[in-house]
Length: 308
Length: 252
Image (cartoon, rainbow over all chains, first blue to last red; front, side, top):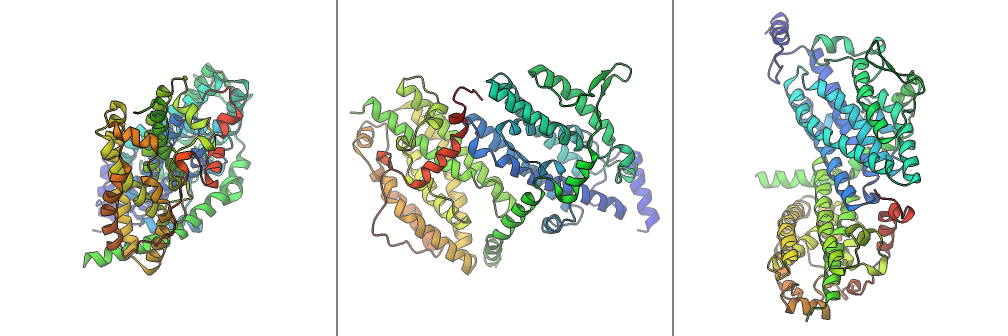
């Protein structure tokens, strides 16, 4: 099939709001864009297991420990779905992990911040997963079929994660003065990085142009960020937490909240590798991957011997 | 005849094995050699913690002092825990983890199979759920023993090392004291001496098929029935109990 035909059938499907499927013809740039985005999404799920895993052994009740374990297991499962989704585009998981280790592939910046207290587990569930849901709900309508379908299931689980995070914060705000201070401190540290999860302002977003044309991205960074702020402010107020933004106020005309300016210098610094945990997260992932090499070799050798 | 205290202690034994083994397994989160195995480890940890919660909740009811499962998990000291020593040993490498899992899950499979017919309805009900989990844990570790034992020279060496490390802790699994004997006699607890030959029958062919030699052990370690543990338990508890101890008035 020539390039014109490829473009034509691909564009027809997009125009009719039909999903692009793995065996469909698609422009190379579309494929590359998806591999970059989906692998980054998969890596984020997997790297995100580290800050939360940091608290499993110290979870303050058996119920909390089980919920956290189940949640992290879900995140790992999301990673698996998404690696498989990316594999339908012609890249192997091994290649994606290599790209992560060499720095060619990224993961969500948010996981370069540390989970310092138990309240951070609440804040990560409520704010970080809450922000992720807003983004992922819009991706349920993304144009690549396997990615859209993965998002449907992932959103259901993320919604549970968001509620468990909010429950942790609610319990702490009903608790002792020390617990309330711990919860507010976590709120103060996670609020702004959560807003940064939606990426740069629309005017500064380098990957958005084609993503809209190809219907990969359905809502802009600023639209999604606004949606997150509007739903979260009331949740914070309900349990007595203060949003750490003195410029935050309801705008009657726009029917949404105005907010203060995000520290984009911090955003760029962390994206460029100088966040509190960038080195720690990657060092850990590389170390575990390398230490597991002999296990993978043994499994492969055993499978090969038994296939004969 | 079974005393009230003997039943309470037996429930702590069952609960603590789940809690401490679950703690060790949970340490493996984000440390798996492949993502699938990372998920398996957290799943196994979850099964163990769930089982611990059920047994400790019942232990609190039997004790009758108003203590919850969390009070028992988070506010007892080192000498009040009754899990088998093997549960608290460090994970070691992936082969060690699988060697221990095979030893423990095969034992637990037989134990919970026996407890499914306990005359104590609560124990029987928890065992009915636990036996399904233990069977799955057993199959999972068995398959890894085959892969590692017959995979490469290195994986075989590591797996043999794992069994060498843990074998001296296998004798304790089957130890009976006077309370355990009374519970078994009354049809509430399991007779662990009967389980020992069954366990060997279950495990020996797997080791043989994995090219693993049964280690020669001069002495089997012991102590947990009397609350005497390895040095490792104190560190597990200081980590696990940190928040509850640091903020005794807090509810989470």
